[in-house]
Image (cartoon, rainbow, N blue to C red):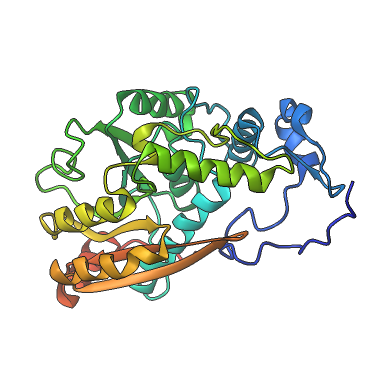
Length: 325
């Protein structure tokens, strides 16, 4: 066993309002979800932890975090579906809330009149859960996979506090992101997205092997997904760059339906291409928000097509009842 590591008290790269800035308090987490105890043990650094290369341990940890911090008593996902780490997903929500507040005299617009679209909500429904629990926002979650929609619906059904707040729409055309999802005269204050990262299954497997070898002292030769993930969740033709490019192009057609469109961008190398596409689409304003969790650096790219006058009218008519956060 290696000498115990000296850790920072807080994960300073996470957003200041993120509930997960402190190291995991496993005693408290086990009190909330006793079944987590079987996965908690001392690691090679003599720290209390779980085996992050074990999919069952990772899934149960995230289930426990949702219960302990967000009051979600019933949450599950089908086998092999993406189980995103809750702290990183919470960071996106908090940073995008700050973006809205920057347009609203420093006040985050709160309550279910603030309507958000989660493109690719997934079976886990993480973004809508955190967005509602932290800011009271309502959500529409879209996905091309009916099993994901069914799983997310089950989570809402089993947690009464989410009823009437989160709804779902199946996207029947995998090439469309907004068509048939945004209805006529429907307005969204915000759209969010965690796009497929890789351009092929082989690229996804290679990335998984790298991650597993970083987590294990014993070299891994077979890729298995500790965080799960189906094809549409992990990769698409052209990868993240093409996916975001399609999003930018299609968002232009719904330029007055949303205040801010946004997406996670994991690859720094894609940004120049994204900026060029946004310029071509004549976005009025583009914001890039850096985020960090551990050694991983990512960012949110957000844009709007609304003029200053249109933004002012939107805020006055839709965000007129706000509270100081």
